[in-house]
Length: 401
Image (cartoon, rainbow, N blue to C red; front, top):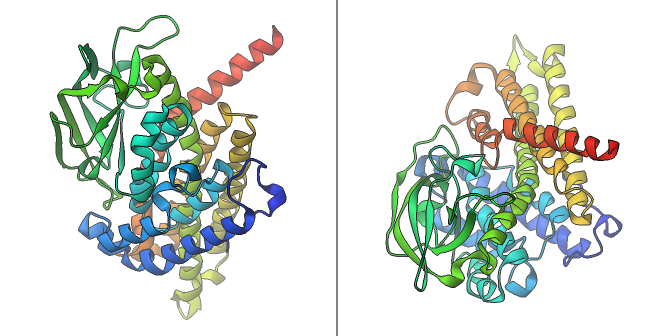
């Protein structure tokens, strides 16, 4: 099954990239993923890293800046186009997508939408080339999906800020050239949480990156604890030159990122379905293909139906984001649905494979483990339910007056 590229009439009129150019970008990415990355998934997992030649190829394809406007050196995909590319990247080891995710997501988009001209000039171009890899430093002990308990502090100095605190589970920490750091700069007030977002160079004095985390899955992605000990940054390190603006900006871009993650989940679910179909056709029991058994066909039907529904939802939600129709409820609903779908489709894939699906080195075993994280990061499924349900209630109260 193939990803359908929308024609020009389906693309938002503001898109920098034409339908023809988008088709070429998707085709090149698909070829790279399926011919270069898929055969090396075990190498990525066992080596706990993306090989240098694959990283260089990703840079050559423009994947470090696919969602950054062309004026800053990126490919210029809007979100309706971004999700199509995300499906392609999601088809393989999620560590590959993870490496480029922050550059195109929370870091890149915060700078694009809310950064100052000087901040964009300083960071965006090296990020689009892969010279700088971004890292999003929000999570800490007691402050994950809800940053209300955040304890990392930013204290004003004569010429900038001093950042102190410890972050955990930070993606790309060991290779980061830029940390996007959430820090509390004052006590919360009504309408403002007192949390700002700061641009901290990866080589700043006072940063200590811990050993690589040993995770259940996504072994090729680099996550670690990061300690900030009186790390000094200049006054212009505050996103948008306004601490209050920075936090609101990051929350907005996090919502955008949930749509991207949903599309990644669709790509991974499609891979699980494809692996299931291949196993159903090629595996035999008693001289009969297991795909001829109605119970297996039923599982395949469930996988196909759920993947198709998730794909339709994520594309609809991306279009609504671009148009401005819905940037609050739909992103969370879509992230919730698509990541939960992936978990179910991956579980069925292991079931269809039988005992072999439980063995290391088999694609669906890795997918089963990799998929689990998508229901946790960028807001757990429970947080998404609270966002969706809470906003629905608020909307109904407004309607009723």
